[in-house]
Length: 205
Ligand SMILES: [Zn+2]
Image (cartoon, rainbow, N blue to C red):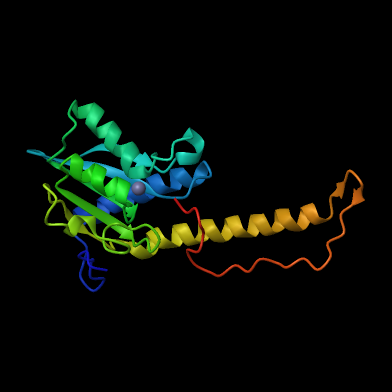
């Protein structure tokens, strides 16, 4: 990855750990409604110290909205709360590396900093697939730190996909033996799909 990554040998700053724990709580909310577990929170710098101003979790399926990634949900709440489409004193914590849509939305909003957990080798736009945050030609530069509590964030996603694959296998196995309109369906020479462990889903957020 090109984006600066948190060195697991170095202690995390208490503020970053607190932010990512809150984002993980949001990821659990996504899990509870059957969405891919990604969560985000937005923290704003104030004279009294950092203030949590918005939360969001991934919900494209439940809201029929392909843009409803955790970052966008939190971003819309924060902008509405502050009555401003620009949020230059804000930092966003998200459990998965932002995609290109979210990375650009955060830069349009002039975010000061983005901290993410697990890398996303499929759509990550902070160093995994491309690195929009490193484009010096773009008019706003947002600092980025990746790999913060990456194990906890990634495990939540891997467990979710493993469980979903298990359920699909079970459904397929059950449907093979459900009697169809012309009697029982007898599988003949059907090839079983192979599933590899890890983040190998096609539609994983
Ligand atoms: Zn996104």
